[in-house]
Image (cartoon, rainbow, N blue to C red):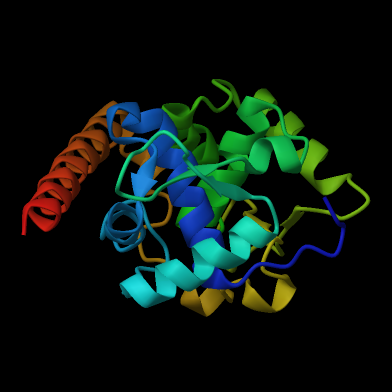
Length: 214
């Protein structure tokens, strides 16, 4: 994979959603274009919240396919379905890929937030493991993450992915409100997020079935 890889925000969201759903809802994976759109536009577990159209998602998938980061599933029958393969193309171990995908889905986060949010994707269970994954991603010929300057009033530093370039990193003023909720909310916050995600996955499945029957 070229060290010159640079994704648009749409492409990063689509790619990370495919990775996420391959783990959290494998029964609905590989995914149709419409399913990817619904996942990309989720209101929870996403920063920034986006409103991609099917055209936006289709364009992103086509570009990612050219970069060999996604591929069409040849066994899906009539409906075209998509698989991601970015850990293979970027030479990422599963836990490290989970950390990167979490940053792609949720924006800049602290180590504690990454540990909590990446857990459902097979990310490291301990803070030391998250730090090791971040070090791996930062120490490459083309760094994939960077540590951000400490924000005023915050005790912990945040990390951001670089797949869309440094100019795409949200400023401190644009940081999501309650960004530390994952680390401060404990197991209940994580459980609620997982339940909401399962509900949205089921809604996406119903919408896709209705689409196929119409």
